[in-house]
Image 1 (spheres, rainbow, N blue to C red):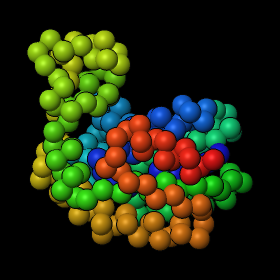
Image 2 (cartoon, rainbow, N blue to C red):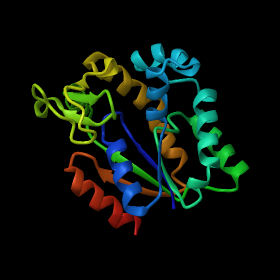
Image 3 (cartoon, rainbow, N blue to C red):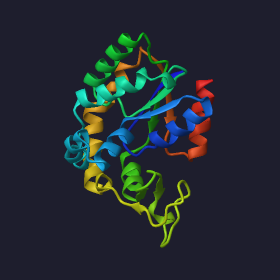
Length: 213
């Protein structure tokens, strides 16, 4: 099963992608995680992407597409995958179609998580990220001497620069202008699944799995 998960930044794509990948025994491919790792490690790619990501912009298509193509070639993707964070523009969607053509594959499903902008701004601006494993939690849950429930690191949670309110609003502006049209591009290329992204994590997962089966 090959899936693209789609929606505004902060709507919960990464969380749901991990859950769905685990439930279906397929690979979760997150371009965001790949980029953040490169930035943290200050690789050549990371240094190029750092200023763009922190301002809420989009990393150049050729960089992201190259990484993605290599990932999709891996043996672990043969049983299926859920793609999180790409495509974000029509140009990327067309580029991905070319990658699929080269690999002799195609997208089966597109999951779209939906939520109003004000809910997303509140959600992102009030979240923290573990510097060790990347786990995300609401700020209100993280206290002094807090131990990460995912990797057991202590006092490892921080607020990313791209989670500041003004950056979020810019990211949403980019999303509405450049990413929403991608949804229309796939309207006849894949099975479309629209999901209310304001429900609980468990409810959203159940809705997705129910519509995939």
